[in-house]
Image 1 (tube, protein in one colour):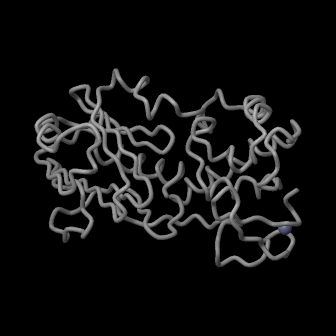
Image 2 (cartoon, helix red, strand yellow; image 1 turned 60 degrees about the vertical axis):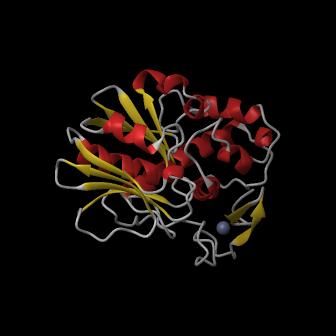
Image 3 (tube, protein in one colour; image 1 turned 120 degrees about the horizontal axis):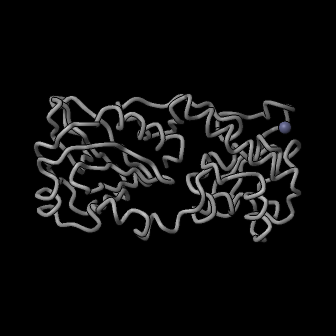
Length: 272
Ligand SMILES: [Zn+2]
């Protein structure tokens, strides 16, 4: 599933590619992707509108339009949203197609069909339920070691489980939770409230470091993820990688097992 670095990479590519571009035509090939509109209403409300900017909140993309409308998209497991040559063959799992006045298509392709698209108004963004419940953004100035420490203090859950909770911190998923905990040398099953302030500070820096490193590499492609130009990302995980057998720091075999229902990679020696 695309996480913060992948969604941020798509956001940057779309923001660059869509600003000022108008929608000439829309085809809804899989109506189930539209969560609050009929295909007809979606098409009629958007024809002729133009994009002003693209933003990201957690793992959501927000495409702002001149009319004040916002297309809100979550790619879930296997969704891809990218700009494409209109003459390129239609993908098997093409759900949505926007024909644009810059000579390109914007296509939403989703093999597993869990992705979702909502059409709302910019004024609804702060209160719209899926967005309202999201926790702090890792790069927001309000996120700090103190802030993270107070989030940890309030929970007896495993630290990895807490990092995955989008209502506490938004944008971190299974890969970057493992990467950040490895970087901070913290065992994924530690109880969140057992971390010292020093460990919380280390985890805070590690979260930003791994997310930043991945954004620089355009995210990580395991199977489906592609950037806004349909290209894979190149982030090389430190520990969350089935092909990696040994810890890059100490050479101990990396443990790979299910924790909190998620495939988890960690070094049993470095991570305490
Ligand atoms: Zn190690």
